[in-house]
Image (cartoon, rainbow, N blue to C red; front, side, top):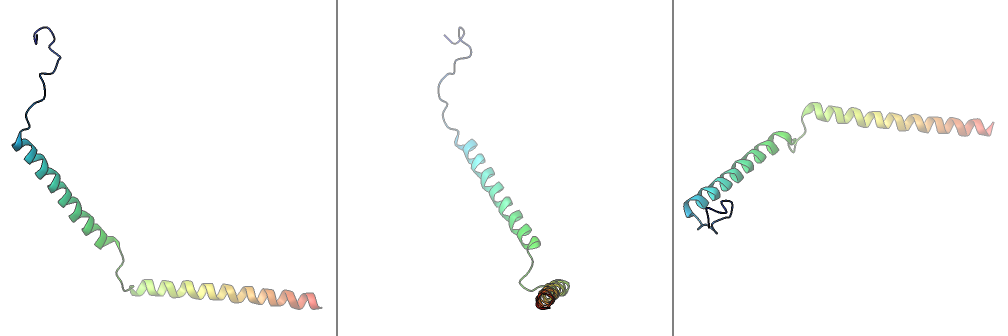
Length: 86
């Protein structure tokens, strides 16, 4: 029968315990490697709890620019109200 239909499967093969063990070890190894890489990248990419001096300085400049913009808008609004009263 096999000679007539060479493409028919012979039936389910028995599970090879050694082959499955290798696959499990490979998957666990890849998971471990990916975890280590992810942890290493998370530590390098995230800023620490304390900001560096340049970062603090930049934040201060941004805050000051925001305050100046608000003060200028208040001055414009005050000038507009005074112009409307005249």
